[in-house]
Length: 250
Image (tube, rainbow, N blue to C red):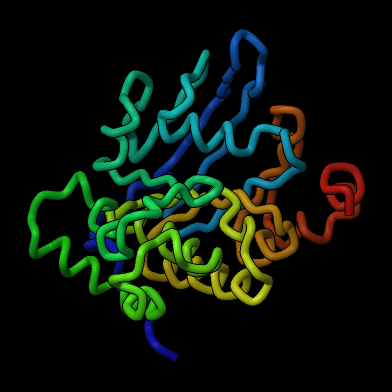
């Protein structure tokens, strides 16, 4: 089996990379998050699960700086992010792959990857990172000069994840990476997520496929109506009857 590529330079680990405390977010005065707290420790895959409309994407967007927090604390590698705009969070090592991929459909695969490194300015390093992505995602090498919008949904998701990695994040946040892709690609995407994690990147995963999300995660949080209602070891959550019946509808 091929060893996981080293996706980030060796650093002294800061534990935890992400700590969210009592986070409140609203839309036009309507509360969406009611005191969400979570953390991602070094080397972990953490899954945030729950039904649609319960605040999973809102949580990721707030951490990324795309949604303004009304109250609470977001600390990343020890730095308080309150007031730090979204574009300044990326070079700190925080990268979000949004739901729906949000690629540039009329640009090539290679150009999409290069734009993922917009915070980096050394061309040789960017080229080396593109080569790393081609190693991790061989299909992208085959499609390097193809327009992103002409690829299948699964291939586009691979490109979206690769573009997120081009910023060389310490924490990669993935919002519904299996959304809208064929079942055969779902397993491939989840396998890649595990390889990325093995290469040194912590993962915060929001995923509609609850079995598979908790199946690859180390720790999990269950969110309902904007509140974390349960947390624990991912394997234990997956097999907890209360979680399956009440919160996940299984």
